[in-house]
Image 1 (cartoon, one colour):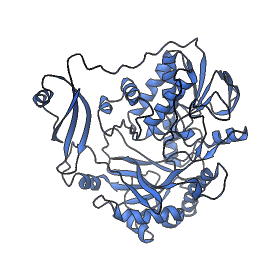
Image 2 (cartoon, one colour):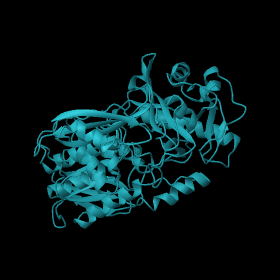
Image 3 (cartoon, helix red, strand yellow):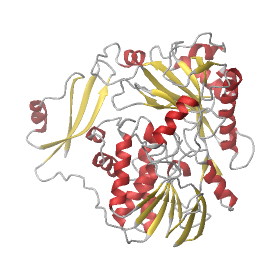
Image 4 (cartoon, helix red, strand yellow):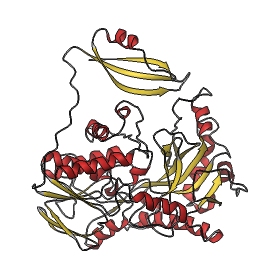
Length: 512
């Protein structure tokens, strides 16, 4: 096998004659597509060329009928829980999926009500419900680690369940919040068709038993049994940590990141990243950056080209923001989280909940500031223009924003914790993106759900909860992943461990 590349203008795809000439009579396979905007923006296509009979296409393992098989209880129907369930089907075990929220279509009504009235349904919102927090986001499929498992298993299954085949080749693949619900629903249908179970409005309140025989009790009194329990509850399920702690289980404070959502007009990002060469039909430009400031990382997070800002609170009396974009990424605005790394030593105390409690206090502070000015708009977000934030000046007039509940001019430079605010104010002026630092950019508070501030410790070899063997803490909520793909891979690994099929699967910890 050998590799070759072809570049071409953004307005067209490679010509077949070019590819065949480069392949030199060998079988060619497209493996990666990316935009190279370092100079004149071009598409860059990378191919692999194989001798006849050498290329072996990737094949997914087959799903088994598990209607009468031994059950494993999967708590949570986000990426980790869904892919754990699919893996259990291939291993001959029956997944019983318990989801505290509603199915992916029904939860849309609660999210619409949240945006329109500011009323939070604590069990059904942008974080809780089928598909998890990622179901209504940009659907980014990036991961920094290829050592955790086979990424192809995740991407190929997403394609089989309705995602575009482009995710198999794009350097920065994404699905889009308009298409993800169908993918999520098709995964559920597959699990049900092969004998698994799904139960919505099933908030877990207790896990009892021991390895090989667990009982999982829900708030409605229903009890489900299984040989093992996979905890895939997401980064915002604070009550799960409290449940484990109340039963004497071990927990650890874990670093995460906190900051603001930054919203620019998309045309400004297009102009900067394409050097003024953007034109209709060319993908909306993205950006990312990482800086070090006063011993902590400051970085962009969850960038949504052509996207909108949405309220992601899971508790009344808090304001939390996130971003989302549809598959076309055709909206007027670009938004991203810009956040500062927060480590356990940054928050005084020794309690495992101290970062979680600190996170909640910042979210409440944002709400309380806005409520004092407009007590009837529960989800209004405090906001400040970028240059005003840096110089410590209240913004007199707000620019247009995609955030439907609206904004209130606020001194974010004072509302944010000082060690977060100070670092952001130093970094914004030196971001190496042309015209990024501008008062046309709006900062909104707060971006706080970057990852879990609590880790559920597990054995690095067996992946079992150290306080109760047979329970497998999994994904973002357990502190072992950071995104759709890495969470899905972690779910697969925990399913293999629960089945005893994966042998020793050495653990790694995902940076938030």
